[in-house]
Figure 1 (tube, rainbow, N blue to C red):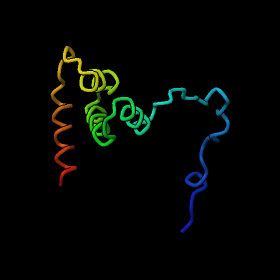
Figure 2 (figure 1 turned 90 degrees about the vertical axis):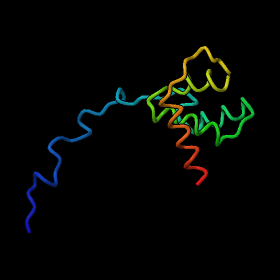
Figure 3 (figure 1 turned 180 degrees about the vertical axis):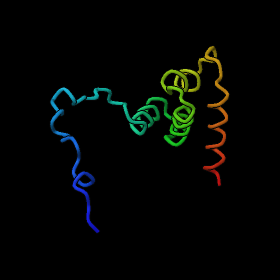
Figure 4 (figure 1 turned 45 degrees about the vertical axis):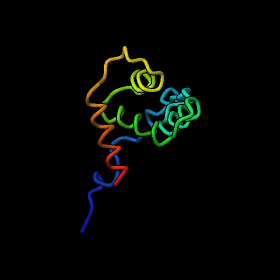
Length: 99
């Protein structure tokens, strides 16, 4: 079986358009959920498992954990309205972890 040169050779060289401007440095030390989870667990003296579940529920619902989970549940600010989908996902994650 013969291969066409077009199939195995990219049509454009990736290096042609790649410059130092393409490099983005992420400065946020808590940019990954595992870092955020550990930080919050230490700060609030709670289990990392509990924090991870809250952060994951927010992520799955498309909600920023720093804007919802942290103030509402860790800081206890009940003036922030409950987002039912986050609560439902959190309950499901908790059920799954108990199985």
